[in-house]
Length: 288
Image 1 (spheres, rainbow, N blue to C red):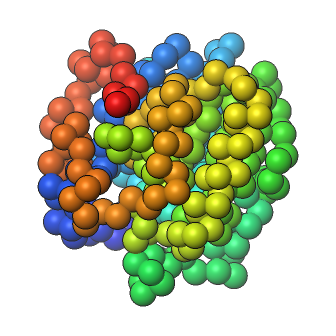
Image 2 (image 1 turned 90 degrees about the vertical axis):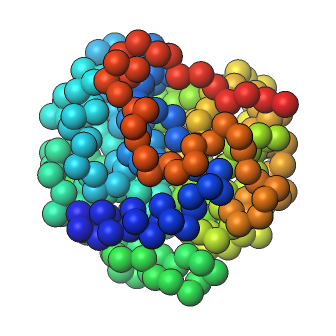
């Protein structure tokens, strides 16, 4: 999505979701010593650092303030050489698009082989129950295509790729170093637990629910402590909370899904400041 289209999308999305308490992005800051995030309106992108090397998870909107906010975290865009993409929606790949600032022009992009079909034009991304096609995303970065269950190593990082189709046909989640699960748009955290992500934005809601069931079973089988980090609604280390309502869809225009902790309008970023980014640790979601 071009920069102008990204800016134009902000206005109707703000009007559509204002007061619905659906988007609850973390502000720019750090979850812990390894994971930092940048807020871009209603979306978060993440940075994972170990032994002096930082990789990026998702690339957000085609967003004018990305360099500025990365500076609040003392992260140099030029140092980012590897970017994991959960899915190709325009709020997750915008900084890679050809008309962006090209902050990461030299980075290698990792994306699922099924998800790549959107980028090649073989498949078009549809939302609102198939009624609307999103603009195609165009990027020129070198790509590595990933398969379900594949484990890759980037330096000292161990990254496991798990396919969770539904929101998009090739959505991947990434388990890094067996401790941090980056879920993109597969789980929506409400006040009373994790749901299947926003119904109106899925390619196939039934498939999304089945994917969450499979993911939960796999994580429970491993029986390891995890930090589960979403693209729009914060993070938790409570596995029970994360999957508590996985069989239910988040329906953004139903009052049931409102959360008092959510901002009235997630596209207003007045409380996202450099001071808070440098001084306030980002807390996990409150569980009930």
